[in-house]
Image 1 (cartoon, rainbow, N blue to C red):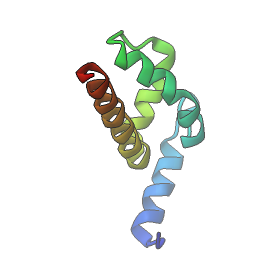
Image 2: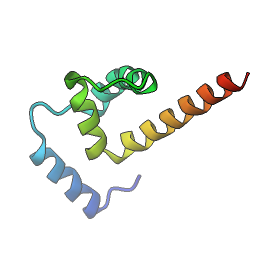
Image 3: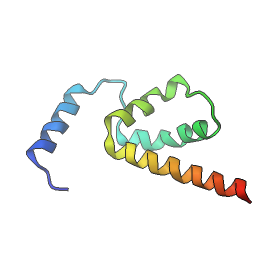
Image 4: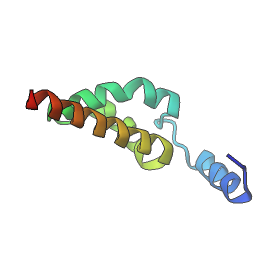
Length: 83
């Protein structure tokens, strides 16, 4: 990825706007599996996973990865039900 002035500006704004309760991409990756399990079971998301959901609103890369993971799980579940 080429670092443009626009990208650097967005990163700087994100750093300034980061709150202590927010998590970074590494922490999101550690916790996203639990979120996916809960969503697959159709359960309500517990409050301790709120930062994981919030991170998805802030991070387009993790949001894209989450959508791909969710789609793969849904497809896998659909194949399992068909058999």
